[in-house]
Image (cartoon, rainbow, N blue to C red; front, top):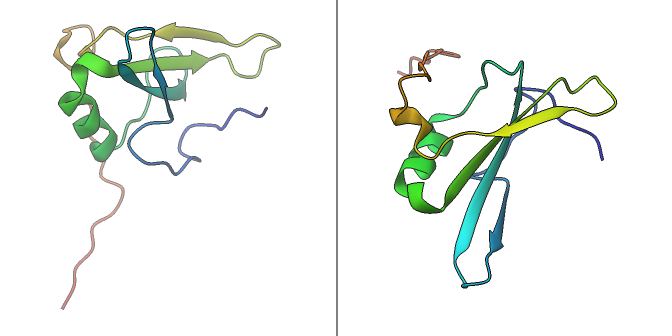
Length: 96
């Protein structure tokens, strides 16, 4: 299985889901990055916030090694002071 580099994937609100032994469905998002940052779309973040109790985000990094590293980010990472949001505008469109 190949690992998609940051910015190359086009997906919906999450990458996969699973149901635990109690029948609760969890939504999983997997992001690649440098171990210190990752990109998330506004729609993905909105979905995460709406489903915070059932949302998990994993950051995979060192993807060019034989065994990439990964870590699960804390629940509601957007409220954690260790995580600073930096918004990047990709394009501006004017219509007439």
